[in-house]
Amino acid sequence: MISRARHILGQAGALPSLRWKPVGTGKRSLVDWTPQHDAFLGLATDATLAELWDVPTSSVYYRRRRLALPARVDTGLPTTWTTAMLRDLERLTNRQIAAKYRIGGVTVAHKRRERKVAPATRWNTVQWTAAMLRALGTRPDNDIATTYDLQPATVRAKRKALGIAKVIRTKVDWLSAAVIRQLGTIPDDVLAERLGVNQETVRIRRTAAGRAPYRAFAWTPDIIARLGTVPDRVIAEEIGATTSTVAWQRNQRGITTWDTRAKKTPDQ
Image (cartoon, rainbow, N blue to C red; front, side, top):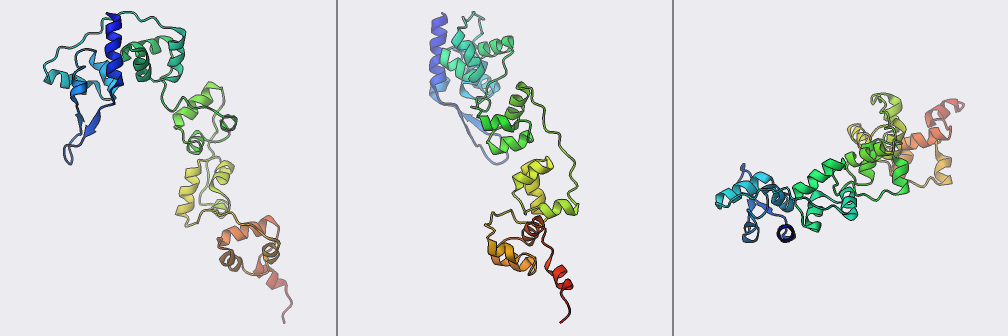
């Protein structure tokens, strides 16, 4: 009996996930049922089939009722969990385990809760590199998630699992001249790390301030020699940078502004 049930689940799990079909503007989409999927209704529990086919349990329930098929009751027959199956709880989803071992999705969910194993998703099966691990706790979780194309919850869970404290966000005065001066003069991610905020926050603030994104430029000796000898905007126009970028480079080298130098020049 158990082998037959597993055979049925294996066949049902081999079918592709059900798709949704639109039924008109403003109306809910409906599941696009196929004869192949209909053939398994009632042979396994609604919840199990719903998980295998990636649809709500209610969709399976109403489809089965419409076809006047009796419900399958979970007999609760025990499943022998091998070491390999228990390891898979850490890295596979309930649906993947159910299809792989031909057991019910509900059975997998019960075992997961029993062993207190966090639900596996396609995000928390990430291969964490040394660089990714070093970033934990040094930058906001959302920023790390954006950098490595992860979910913030995945980064947060990994950081907590390693006992790493989160970055305490600092309150930034975005209207202060000191902060505004830096927008667009250095890369957003560098400024974000310096201020202790998310990179996306810096991008939004920079755009709102009308500042173009930072563009790397090779500051040649000739360009550096001209800093402070002409207005910053002149050099900015020549090299295709913002005036604030030129000003920042000049200030970093302790060079005074062009007008300050001009005032010190004796009247001709």
